[in-house]
Image (cartoon, rainbow, N blue to C red; front, side, top):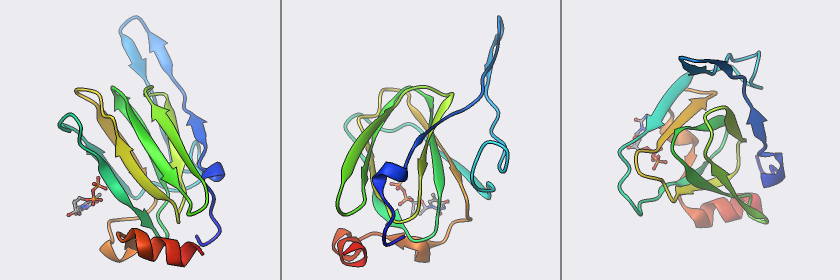
Length: 137
Ligand code: TYD
């Protein structure tokens, strides 16, 4: 977590089964992901101009998917930053432990689906950027 880098937060192509009645994407822990899925949550009804996130995790890995619409994910490892735009339901962004993230620029009606490696644990959060910088330095 101390040495984790934004460059290891990669975009994973997911599968897509297409037919004339629409598409389906399947994500199975072990098969498509480097972790087992213990929790799923999704952000929706995000008012225009709002940002989410603004924290890092000590142990949690996540796959973030724009299930609908689009948004930007700002990733920061304490040294490097990068912004990833998510706008396709068949691609996911892997966010590894020890990365500060902010989600912003949500399009109207966007749905941010998050597949998580652990159940919710407030102790796993680093919510102060100054503490994050200290841990990463
Ligand atoms: P938080 O992770 O801070 O939201 P975001 O990063 O999207 O801005 O969570 C918002 C609130 O929801 C906070 O009070 C904790 C609660 N929460 C749970 O109880 N369980 C969960 O699995 C998640 C993700 C959040």
